[in-house]
Amino acid sequence: MVKLNRIYTRTGDDGTTGLGSGARVKKYDLRVEAYGTVDETNACIGLVRLHTVGDLDAMLARIQNDLFDLGADLCTPLSSAPLPYEPLRIVAEQVQRLESEIDTLNAALQPLKSFVLSGGTPAAAALHLARTVCRRAERQMVELAMREGEHVGTAALHYINRLSDFLFVASRFVNDKGVGDVLWVPGQNR
Image 1 (spheres, one colour):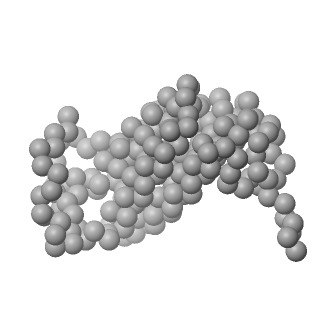
Image 2 (tube, rainbow, N blue to C red):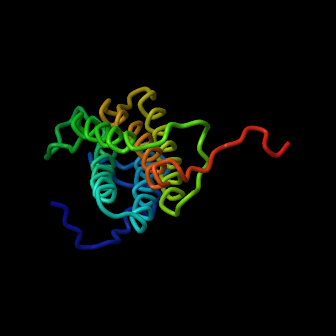
Image 3 (spheres, one colour):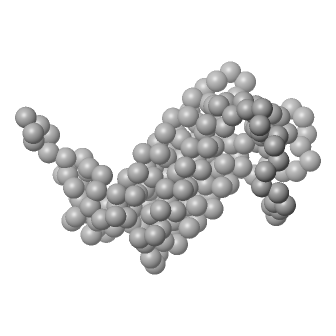
């Protein structure tokens, strides 16, 4: 269990932050950017939840918890030195749950006839914002995984990719199951 006695430590006043491994890195390090953007995604989902109830809200609550797991995973890089604890990692079951929830929501939707613009209900607009922030987190995680000497777990990469899909499907779901989608009309304003 996490226990926070003090919120400020002053250890980051020099522009560095501590990773879960104990290593200190610059606050602009790509790993910090990646888990920071995961945190932004979580905050966006918190805004979405102001407009959701029932099963979808329960799904989003689980996702918010998963995103803390993902942040913990990202902030604890693989290390050759043993850690005094077992690092928390995203696992395949979390990805599979997301896939199942995507399938559940998607089964109720109208077929797509065009790309969907952000908008419709307040919940849909907030879900689209969360989706775009999630995609940024995914780009950062992929870049981090491609760097020499860095590692990002396969399940973590799969999770963040599925999450953006979930957020898209959920945005359509709250737009009256796709009926209220705002569709792109190519060249409409020429």
